[in-house]
Image 1 (cartoon, rainbow, N blue to C red):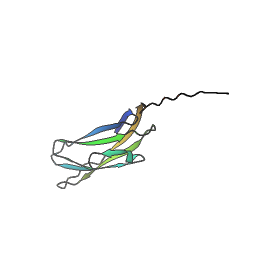
Image 2: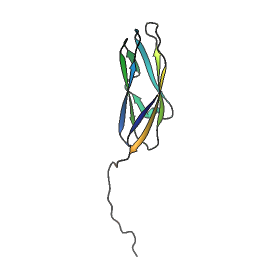
Image 3: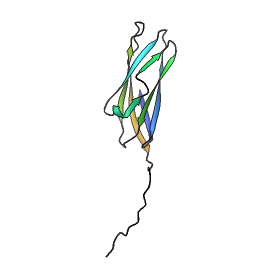
Image 4: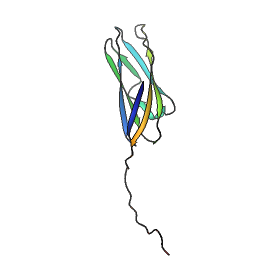
Length: 115
């Protein structure tokens, strides 16, 4: 699935990924970011442990620095816990600038033309 990071230029957007564990075994995942703009995204932590029949959360943060859309992929791969493996999951991360607000204004008066 795709996680969209939309916001104003120069703001930080945080999205929370919820992971459910429907099994009777504990699952543990390691998270990595890959792709063209992976360095612009960050994770709250690199591993997530999900107890049986519970859910776990992972925060993904992105600071909108440029007008062009940023793209990366979040990969969650399972670490064996009690000889149990979970499925590898991938999420597409995409950004979009919805608004541009100036950081400040400078007013300057000058004659346009003089003889």
